[in-house]
Length: 303
Image (cartoon, rainbow, N blue to C red):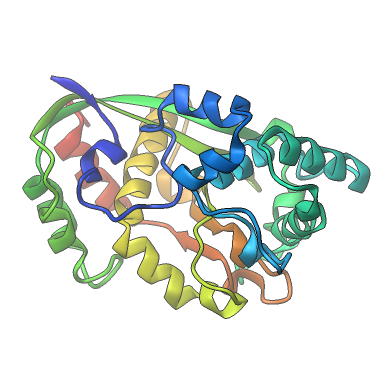
């Protein structure tokens, strides 16, 4: 019996992913990132050195410190009602707080402008973060749900019926190769952002992953490959099941297909308002029967 998380399921399987997920990240390490005065030594251990001749977003330092910087800044950013001056002040404060050179201020500011002005769906141009008020969002939403005994083989079997249609064809095989011990107890996690827009709920996960030095490296094909390779597909199904479980018990008349709009993984370095959702944006809306199958196999007494 234990408390499991997405990170505990995939630990030991993945390569060195740039940004540790919040459900596995050591709180004392996060405090160290905020307070350690020897940032040069720290970045050598947990990320690349900051020096770069270029000041574009692709050259912004990589590693855990950069990832937590972006998460913390976006958690405090009012997408809708903040002025340019307020956003500039926030960027400056967070760069100083996390020990980054202020030469990055305009670079990060441009990234924010691209982020909040880019439509997240091609067919829904009004779905932009600058239209989401603080009152319509929850940052860092923590969840727990009870968990039946789960194995890599069980997870693989659930996804195998949908392979090649709604998820990558080799995804069940990747899941089956996970090496975690059979787990029972609770599933725990933190969702970066949950927001509501035009009557639908959406999940967002911020990714500061470095995929290349040009915007073309953050195309849909490149992001799809990263989502599959790093098993983020498993992550968002767990997160989505948690939100679905909450809404169906707390929202009168809730219906998954009517009230849920999907999951967004936002690759921050690739956001470009001229390219729209074709760059930096991953969107998925799993079928209701897959979510039901996951709930039935993972959650005790799921109806």
